[in-house]
Structures are given as C-alpha cells and as structure tokens.
Image (cartoon, rainbow, N blue to C red; front, side, top):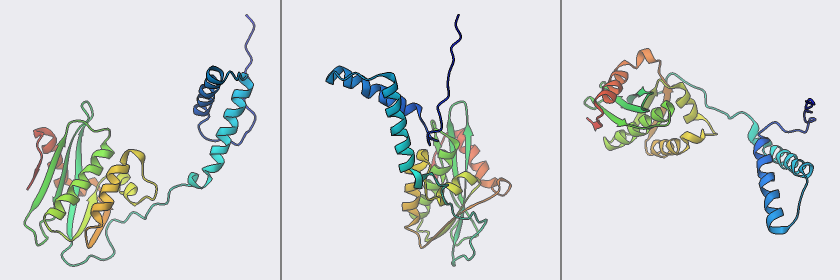
Length: 217
C-alpha cells in the first residue's frame, strides 16, 4: 500500500481555533452548491477557511490580552463602622453534582448570630456553587438590613473572577447578580480566606448537603 504523506500548513498567523472555520466553510460551500449551483474545490474551501480564521484572529487582537484582575487582599485596608463579616463555603458531592451552600454572618457584629444554607441537587461545577453561595449571602444580608459587608470565600478562583474585568462564561450570570447586589450596600468587599479559617461555614455546608435542606436563620 502506498504511504500517505501529509504536509503541515505553512505559518499563516492563526493561533486560535481553525477546525470550526473549516467546518463552517464546508457547510457554506455545500449550501452554495445546492442552492446556487456554484461548486468550489477543496483547495478553494480551505483557503477561505484560512482567510476567515486569520481575519477573526486579527480582529480579536485587543481581546487576546490577559484579563486584568484586582489584587487579591486578605482584608480591606479600612473597615467602616458596623461592618458585618460573612464567610461562605460549599460542600460538593461529585457523583450527583449536588451541593450544600452555606454562609455565616459574624456574631461579633451588632446582629444576633445569623446564617443561611441552600441545597442544590444539580450544579455544573463547584465554582458555580461557590458563586451561588456568595450571591445568596448577599441577598440574605440585604434582607437583614446590613449596609456594610465583608464577604470571605475560600475559593480563590471565585474571588479572582469577581474582581476580573473579563468574566468566565459559565459564571457570567451569577457574577452579574453579585455585582448588582453588591451595589446596594454602602460598603461591600470580597476577599479570600484560607480553608483552615473557614471551619464554621464548612461544617454548615456539609450539614446542608447531608440534610438536603435550605433555610435562613
């Protein structure tokens, strides 16, 4: 059997996805043949795919730069009076994609001890669950009349996403809700807390996952 030789493409200035453009041009070439009776060779089709992909790559030049993120702080530089500290956490069960979300408001605040939890039986990722925990904590805080809040999560990825200019696609809706809710406070700050310092929220999240209950207390 005669060996098949394959040649690599020469440099063409394309660093992104080429496969999608090839599929698109195969589809449009088919449509032109069926509906306009305009045949095209394989060479013409791949040439158009390369041209479209390169044009798209050049057009996205400004968007290809790494997203800017805010510096991750462990705590705010200054805290307004009566700021309530809120720790959030998530317990996750990978086999069923179930999650227990929990948030606890610091009992050293003028409020009495208050916390909340929410059970979800199907979520796409742990990060989505972490985002939902922060969103629900903000909603609960507004319900309690809190005006100054410091939200702490042991998910560094989430804290970075909240501070990022370019939002991850799977978190876009949740982060938009968080941004909208946070604007209702006089002061709202998000920061990372090490897991070892987040024990109470962790225990509450595990209890929520086990009992499959949701509550505000």
